[in-house]
Length: 514
Ligand code: C2O
Ligand code: CU
Ligand code: CU
Image (tube, rainbow, N blue to C red; front, side, top):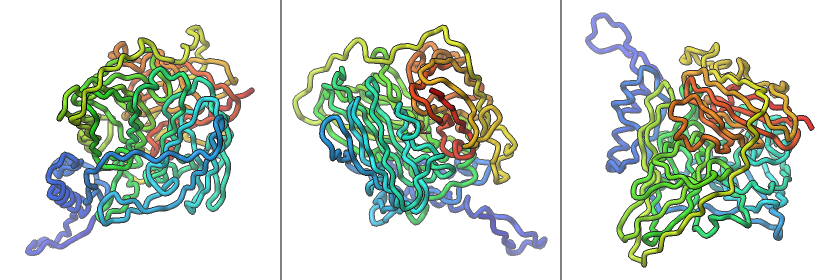
């Protein structure tokens, strides 16, 4: 907010514009520092904010959630017998307790955020009833699952406020992996997600080679509270950059802590359900062994020093706690410059696990190979070139409307238009080029695609190369080749998974014919 004031004793009597929001930010940062005792959770420093040459969001957090115990997410109750998964999700406003003594108004599935974890088996017949009590249109999109297009929560099929619908589909054999669900209504996906609507969806296999490992789910969301402890709306800068909050939560908790026996080997399923924040994961205390990206296993376990998860992405890691008591594992996210016009979010701690005094658990040998999808043929016709752009007519982003700035092949989303035609079950190869100034994570519905090449110099060591994913990040100037096949007919979305970009039109429709 800009206010004009007359400076006392100034003979010229020229009003001076003071940026009130910037002053509030500075104070908020200091106040938070005092409250948190420099606990490492601060995401704003007055210095970095002052150095920004652009207006800052009107309100950043003056409130910091307290560090809490590890939160195990509730499971969505299956009311059917084996072979079926039948349940109800109710989307409605609710109150959350991020900060003690403050009820933060959120949107919740079944009363909480993140929503309950859905756990079903390959081959299961799923019937999930959505009750929409939000007071606005919504849908549920089953991110990454290869299910029929008309059950996939497309923006063209809204569930009106006050109504219900059933989503009915079966989980394909071979689809075991980590997925998630979130709303996908036309235009309001970013708000519904940052207000709390998102949950994990695990598809299990009866022949999972890692089934012996205890599991930990880390569902990462990004919260921005205003000075009254309420979720702050998106600003013009959020629309341009993709919203980043300033409290990164894991399972709805702030920097949760947990304890395990020394030497415990766990499988971590990590979900980045943020609108715009990238998590560049590093682990202190043990190596990270990557076993899956998005919903698909890698061909074999791969030790990685860091793992970048763009919004919408998942990674599965196998981690062995240190084999002695009193040691720590700390998962953190490093800074990542994705071309934003605001200060890059600082590195933050995500969670911490300490080893107890219990007996040491022996190391667990991992299988040499994992059930990765079969590679797609390498003699495919090159059928599409997609060009992602963030430099359309809204360029000069301070001006308010960004309509037309975020495009794919020069076009903004039109729900009535088919952008791409494919034949069900027929594999193709596409070139995707990011001609913009920012990173953009491309997501395609209803399938996982194989990344077969990238123009990035370091691609040979990139764990994504030849892996199957449903979101792939493209850095500015990067060109990639992907192979994909969509099994069933219908209209499918493809879009940037920075949700603010998606909502402004960086999305298209693939019409898959029978
Ligand atoms: Cu996770 Cu079209 O979305
Ligand atoms: Cu999706
Ligand atoms: Cu984007």
